[in-house]
Length: 106
Image 1 (cartoon, rainbow, N blue to C red):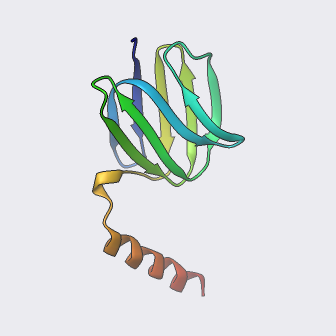
Image 2: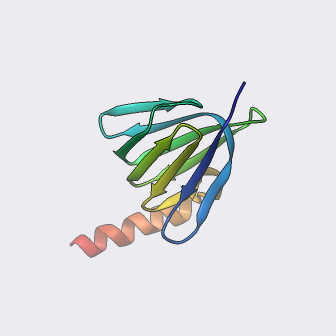
Image 3: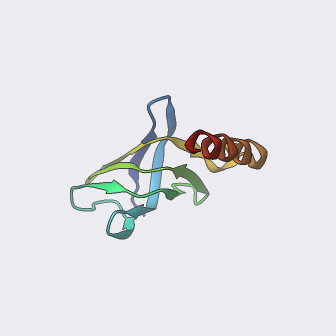
């Protein structure tokens, strides 16, 4: 099966860069599934998980709070705002950040 280059970046860092067989993510109008050779596309993405099926069959999850998706036939770029790898998530830190945000809104 063919692959496509995938780059997931945020303002702070490159989160993921590699070859993938398939990418699924929450588009503005619904869930998007992208395979190699997909038609060119630019759209906003909603908060949620970007699921990347890597060339070796493993899956990588990146969580984004929104952003922009650009698809070219041989390249996918996700500009996440912000973006974090699933295995880097820390429940305690996330809960603390949520409480801080809620306090700031009061």
